[in-house]
Image 1 (cartoon, one colour):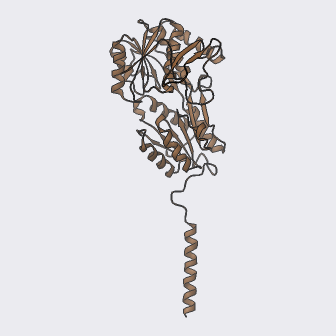
Image 2 (tube, helix red, strand yellow):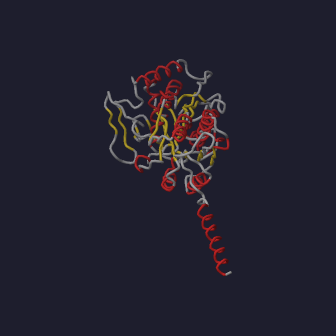
Image 3 (tube, rainbow, N blue to C red):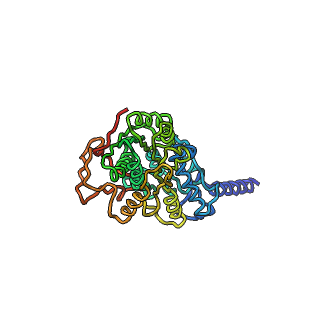
Length: 383
């Protein structure tokens, strides 16, 4: 009898061991290399703001929506983390997306990069794509990637509208931070203006924030009070546009068509079509193909463009001048940062000296902008 009981206990223990070994691991990580289809793929996005900013996050979110439509995905296959600070909250948001089963995660703000890299090292079967960063080439992780667009090309074209419109020959620029991404953009804008108005100068003031409508409005007002009659921006809200309208001056926007917000002020906006990259990267996952370490496209691929011109207020000849410059950029006849071009390096280092016949090769080998020089004609005003 004791032998029978012992045998029964042994059988029960054997089944228990088999059952335990069959249990899946807690919070299994998705494998982006097998079994991913349009029906089951999950996509995560981490944003510093939300679409109500009508600027940077709005434009990224629009790219996500266009990607979803182009690929025929469902709403429940995309998880957005909005209003995520550039701190430890970002790492938490990314981990939550991994735990939710996301196969590919996009993070869209510069300060998210370190957190993306940390989590990417732990989950090699998930693809991590970071906009505006530069560490993918350094980290050399197969599942970590940087992407951006050649927005400087669109900013150059918008600058033409500003150069032709100004009456004081003095432009103002509401800039977020003294990073290469921002400096590259406002330099391109100024060079576009100068190409049609050699007498133009530009004052730049920093907000030290990507999205702070109150500070953006205050900086725009200070620039206007200083004699600037066309305001542009590398900041997320429409506050510079509405401030320009309130003061009877003009504005060139970023990320969204700002004519609805300021119909008497907004001339045009430089924009990015982020869906170009999102569609590419998601298709790589679906096809089992590697995603480029660095990805950057511009005017020729339709990744950057201008919003419609405000025909009611632009200067005569603006559309024609922009089309002429665009054609020359596309043909390679001109480059945004053509020499001769000199500048003082921001943060130290060797100064810029590009001779005639050469140009600064912005975003050609890595996606992130690297132009960080203050050129003659641009005056940075310390707050």
